[in-house]
Image: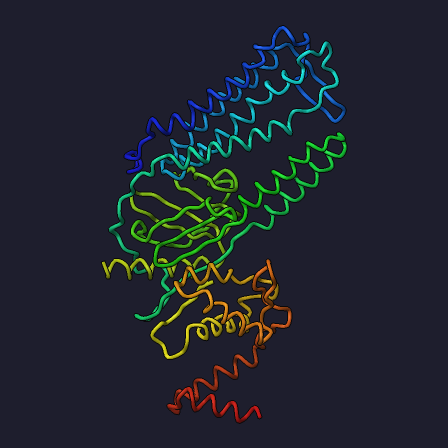
Length: 326
Length: 117
């Protein structure tokens, strides 16, 4: 077990990431039971382009969402933080699980609500637009919980960059900073394509409410595929286009910066903000060169970026400078 | 992109910034269509006044190296040409020769200015 074993999964983490989302999921899924007497015998459980194409009983509507949702929420909370326990990871897990809970929990509730008083639910519209809106509420709630989660103190780094690590030459009186915007062109194009496809779906089903799908896709893709990187005397800061989504690593926690090659699928299982199978945290926009920060407490943070050698060099030079001044 | 400033230099900070960006464009490190950081972001990172960065950007705009567009920021123009390899080679040769002859930067610049008249 690495030194990360010291970082705890606190009761607050479990409350925000698992218990509350499970309660929300259960509430939404079981709400239809309140209206049992007003509901038709058969309820829609799946939709195609021409309206509902699969039907089931009330429990056939409730149980799958409840079970799959609960399993997903618990699995994410347990396994992601088994790989990495840093506050950042815990916060991302909290937002993800609240999004899932609100979105999935709303499907049975919305379906049943619309079916109240109906004798025949064969013509009901797809609840996906509404459930995505609930998902947005979940993101907001999750963001609030993430903000409330106390930040665990990280140890100061004592090691300094090795001689072999990159450096940038700065004279004694020079200040050096790095400012860049990293984005995945492929990711952005996939998002635009998906938005176009889902827009045509909204048109095909003649349901303007479905337009929330492409809107969310565009927002989600730009938030997860465009990162601003800043390196200065305070440390390394990566932030999304939405400024409060960010990670700041102070110079005091950095031991060394190097350049590594990253294989997105093999090492991180995909793209975006990920925990690596080696316990690291990565902002993975694409496979290829990345800045790797070796941090105190055996932690690692990677950012895929261009010209990572210069960025790494600047980090090491600034770290050395701050240590000698301290 | 890396930015360095020397607050103790006799060269004003806005000129230091303009020079670095200009050289990056001439070397082809910054390509036409690429966006420079927002002035506010760069000023905050460097811990200098916003107007210092804006001044640098305005100089580069006047030299037609960048365009400043409302809402879009500072973008390297298509007019920006990468320095041809022959020029860079001749430049390096000139610097080598000047260093061997112990000429100052001022002298070399004066000679170049005269030769280009």
